[in-house]
Image (tube, rainbow over all chains, first blue to last red; front, side, top):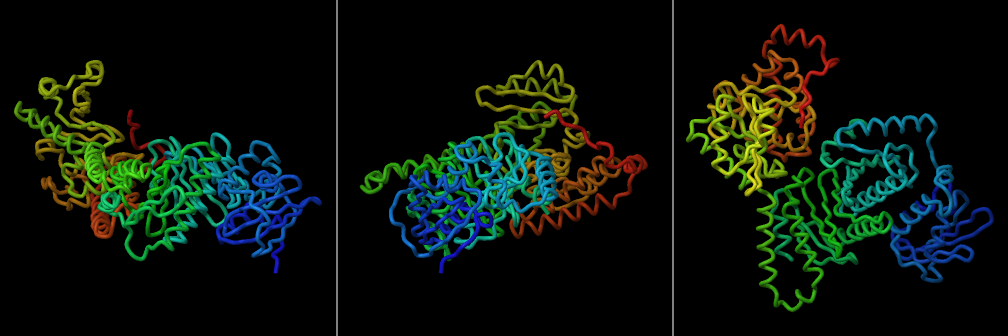
Length: 229
Length: 386
């Protein structure tokens, strides 16, 4: 029996993550303002997508830009074609990058979707981001939902891009911990060039903390845990 | 490759390690039960996809992932031709692990780039030589032995001229703590911190110049009453000599203390030099753990122990010292699970709590009580210049 729902309740980002993490073979049909698109999964990989004249990765990027609409998931339905070979993490990150650069829609439009926080929550998040930045050795903070919506940030550069790093590292760490039976995930540190980001998870969001050169991740995570409660 | 993994597995706190290629296939595995391929491979694939995804979209190289779980830790080194995964205890000393793991990662990268060399079996000798070279590089990466040898040489030369020169700082901790090898961090540079009495500072110039150290004349002319700096260009070693006092966030006087121990300042003074840091970093915190794990609390004059009553006496007259020391001991107790393993943890907690009790119980002077009334509303420590 097909699973149906609203993109406002479950974004395509989440649909892709769920199907890939669960190693599903499935076809997802998406409908938005009278337009229809499909994304196909085979054994946990995104293998095909199409919307109007677009196929392959470009179709995925277009579908990721749909802020609302509905979807139907047909489990076990194989793809009619194979037009995508990139891994799903790369697809999503590139999608986020394009959204950010305005190739499709703007982040303002995206933030209209699930964003299950009231303005009071938003103020709390902003305060939280500021408090986290006061920790010695922390140069920037970003608080981001599990599906990539930035709640608050106090960071140089692009908060969506920095937040995306936190989301992908956090999700990968959680998943790796579960399969290796090391969970629960506490915190993670990614080193990219000269930059280090400490990633922590709370029930509804990830926190990314950009660390200075001499900051100790262990000490910063302990301070951050106190602030996060 | 197995030998390289064995080298990593020999580091304290490592449970096992494995290597996968760029496709996520296992290339080498050295992990105990219950880890098997069914548990490892999906995790391997997830991490690889994340690294590849981030590199594609952020156009920056991912060097490393360090993931902490409740009871374990996984350090992932990106080899570009695959990944090295190290599963270890949550509170492993990561910089110490990196001394071995970073060099091993280099060797693994070379091996993975030349699979045919492995297949022929011919270059086994070459691989063994590379592994031996890697072990040598580990020794170079951790210059503790070299620095300790130079410290002993300098202190010995000073003693022959009747100068009481003593070691301070991280190298002093390494000199007197057996546990330092596993608890403390490797030195960040070729620096030695020393302590001397002001009456000996002119004589000290002659001693260190004989050993090839050049005084930093401008610095010494300006600050020589409290601090002297020297540099040995040939060896790349810098001496930072504190004269009469060690003054960072608080003032620690050496008067009548330097003679009490042979190589380093007395244990209690060394502990105080670490506990006085208000913005304590991981290096200082680890040094405190090592000192208190390796040394019992003792009475005044028992200089091979932590003279708790000496520390108590300093705190009894100076609320600032008291405040910083109690804050740092509390912080160290709070974070102990992240840095020490079972036996170390128990011993540390017991000794730190005893020391807290001594500091709290000692009668406080009127000066102390007056300052305590102002409390934290006014800064109670100095801001060190470096």
